[in-house]
Image: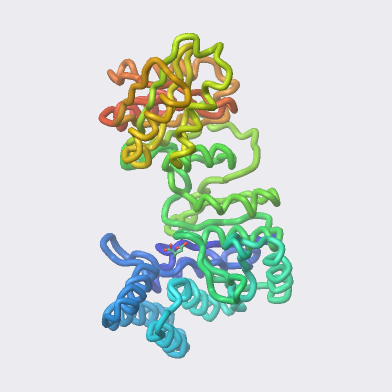
Length: 440
Ligand code: ASP
């Protein structure tokens, strides 16, 4: 059994957290490959080391003094080293970062990557594991995308040879041999890549919550945790704003059929959430989770006899495409179609889009409605349960929420509901109550 364990920034924010991580790793001998993030926030209002590094970079390129944030970074690591009673120093590494910052054109990615790099060095020392530098094992192609083949060829033998290793998250090497980072939160991707490369049995992703929750805890009080969720369900929920894992972290493990287990470093006794390809585990609530986002815009296009006109939809969509606007949803009626877009993307270009739709498709009228919120009710169980939609709408009616739009995905995995921004929280609470609270 091989487990790849990735620890997020809050799990490694100080020496005490490092100790918890050490206990978790030692508790299970199959936890052999460890992917750390950079030290995160120790308390609310604290600054992540990655953000301090970006600050140093910004000051350096502006020709300003970066001593303060740089000292703060040094003391964060020195405190961890001292707290763990390691006889080990990062002074040579600090000197390398300083040298880079003093260059005429310092590398932003190199600077940012040091958060994980230094934490990986400390972790390897603390655990007595080998250290694998992703700059020599994880590669990007000429388009800046992760190069799967090249990575596997380099990483798999290194993992085999070392047997137990720490591989810092968040970065790799570009085609020119320079350090390149993934986007923010990218250590999740590294963990997934390592798990794929060693064909791990499980990819454990340790964070500060006991897995995914059925709803946003800022909206619903103490939402129930989700025990098992499929990759597809997670994708729907993350797209709608539920943030658990970096979006790109699914692909490398999904390809190999490796499940992801989200766990809580501060509550290792909790099972957390299993993210799997497919499952016969029931959620117990018909729905798996609810998520949503505010600030969408609906563009309602009407034309008599629209349904008989060949190519009408294409012409309408062309107007959005020509203006570089991506489309979220597209419910349609007999003589109407609605195109739902992000308000922020659409706002500046609305009149261009409207006149282009008029020019291309000659509709009878176009109406724009703003301040729409979309809510996704997601669940693999919906397909086989009668009355799901009925319960959703009954709950919304009871809560006096006016439903502005309905869209059921063809996968029958989700129902999307459009409500006014002002009803967003109320609607989520009502749906959660009918499906979950009544079952508790
Ligand atoms: N440290 C990086 C960030 O703050 C990457 C990560 O934590 O996953 O975005």
